[in-house]
Image (cartoon, rainbow, N blue to C red; front, side, top):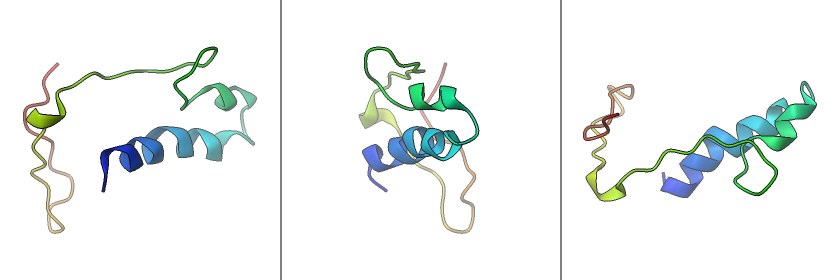
Length: 65
């Protein structure tokens, strides 16, 4: 899955689905002035996906806090 599609699915689309439940969700999942956003900055070249169809829940390597 492309990076931007993954970001959209985990932030914008989730907030969009919750809008009927909470009006506040209209301000979430979007990166623009006047909205609420949690931002993670990372070096995309250092991310290594170790998951597979058999073991999809494995964590990414090289992502440290």
